[in-house]
Image (cartoon, rainbow, N blue to C red; front, side):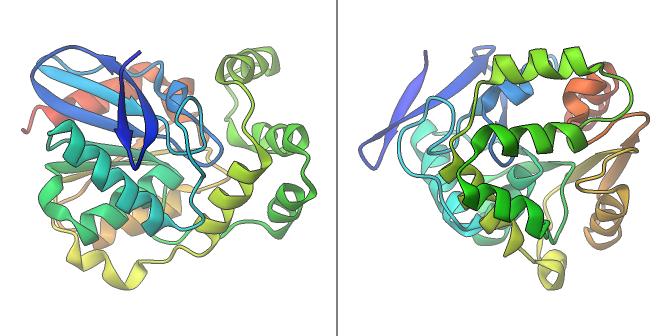
Length: 250
């Protein structure tokens, strides 16, 4: 298993391909790198999917701010010695935009998946996180994270494969999301950007992505039909096609 050390802690990532240009994938709140398991890297590209601290197989404590995660990710990128196109899902998209604001020289481009410039979180979700019931938190999120295509059995299969997240990770992540708002700074992001959303996303509705598209110069917007928040799992063919088309620009 590939890993590096950041601040004395092991950082785990999944890798496909061994050379070429680099795509770096960052998962969302309470997730891990397996959320990207259906994504295929385009020809001539190498893909890396990282577990954030306190998630999956990466050691350390989860961060309770988006900028905290962005600073950590900057250290990861510097250690890996790459200048990737950074793809982030949901909270991962917020992290990607925060890094594009603080250290744009580390990045070649952005892929923003099911995310927004502001990520308010339902008080009910935050209260459930505080309760310490990780299973109930995961179940609630699963009920609203998917569109009409996957069966309940398929969603349960995916969740078993992902494995459980700890309550402290859910609480830190959703606290970070709830405090995230860069609507007034989007014009500062000038990297090439692909914005992908699911037409049936109830957590970050398509209007969030349309707002990003309207305020990021030259951004490309792709809306995937019949997909919810986990669109890269629900509609992998359409997701991979949009990703490959964008990557052909580099």
